[in-house]
Image (cartoon, rainbow, N blue to C red; front, side, top):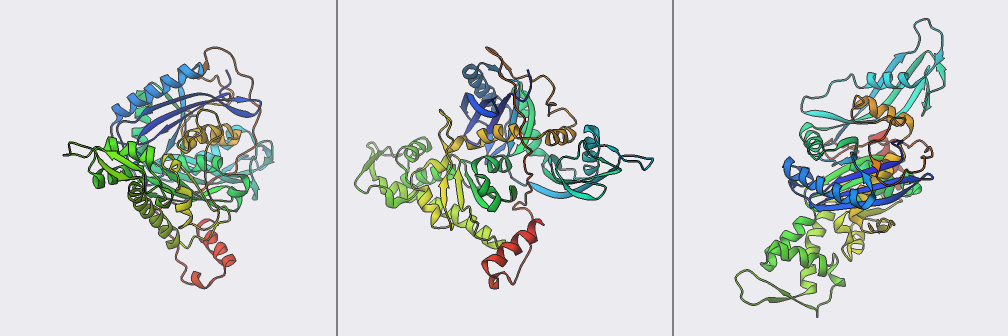
Amino acid sequence: MNNSQIYVGLDIGTTSIKVLVCENVKGKLKLIGVGKQPSGGLNRGVIVDIDRTATAIKQAVAQATEKSGVKISKVIIGLPANYLQMSQVHGLINLSDQGQPREIVNQDVIDVAHSTLSQGLPPEREVIDLVPRDFAVDQFRGIKDPRGMSGIRLELWATLYSGPKTIVYNTKKAVEQAGLQIEDMVVDSIATGSNVLSDGEQDFGTIIMDLGAGQTTTSIIHDHQLKFAYVDPEGGNYITKDISAVLNTSQKNAEQLKRDHGYADSKQAADDVQLAVDVVGKAQPVNYTEQYLSEVIEARLRQIFRRAKDKLNSINAPQLPGGLVLYGGVAAMPGIKELAAEYFPGNVRVFVPNEMGIRQPSYATALSLCQYESGLSDVDRLIKETVHDGDLIASPHQAHENDRIIEKPQPRRPHKSRRQQRVNTEHQEAPKDSSNKKNSGESRFKSFFSNFFD
């Protein structure tokens, strides 16, 4: 079976493991299976107990296998943006020793990608991805796919993503311990940004915010590239802890209250609806209003939104035409859009997948992993194969190991090349622009994007 036909996205979240099985049907992805299990062994989006996480992954995969009829052996995994770093790299190779031009082939793309990886990384970091910006043939830049062209020298400008070895290793280990192989590793924000936003939103600039249980990640997408990511260590679990502490109830009860009766904007909650809450040390339940519960929730969300806004202001981020797009489990809470609009200018919306069975913001990342992988060009795949030495990324022409149990899918149509991503994270120092406050809106855009990304 051609490996481009079936894609399995694995989202390892703090509170749940989600597995989506997608099939390419006439150039479009079709969801054919879903698996979801409670997580174990994660803290703020990072694996801290490999055994527990592996067990949860195995259970979610088994559920997805049963529903899809696909024997799953390879998965696309998302990595959190925690401590993500980037560097701009350049590679160059000579195509001919005799000074005569020749045609560029796949091996030349692999060789020039290897040359970009020659720079050393600190021992505690590991390469996650190498994303090409453009190629040059004999100094003619702006080329996205040099294969088939003729020249004497080939160059590649790319963005190298690296992460802590601990995060990368523990994720790999948990997946392998679950009996799976890794088809690709993708930074969550890169994959999700390419899927939750329209072409115009990616082009002109949009903020995306993943409101997860363990942490909140705020990212900037502009010119179809991930340009900035900030990770806040607070998420939906902190809201649950707040409810538990204020109402003096168990965290299990607090989580249920949050899901069933909570509002992000307390003005939308009813002040005449009484909630009977089991309180520690009380023989009888204590009544609290729905509005009081929502005030507790709102206080934590305001703190998260305020910090994200302050972070964007500290780097002189301009007002982006695309506004803000929210996703992740907490984004399903009623009133979240209205509350976020108080902190972020422009249009605010919540992304909800259209696919039947996953119409919840919490499935955005898992679905995006499948969408992202299906849109990779052959050049993208060659470079990924180089980064991982061929162990993780299967060639588009090799047999895929995610075999359908019942029937054989139709051949996949080729996809157009994906525009590439670059990222600047919260762990890099932002360029300072003391005159920014005096600039017009147009100047602020030019200054911000020029300082960071040109």
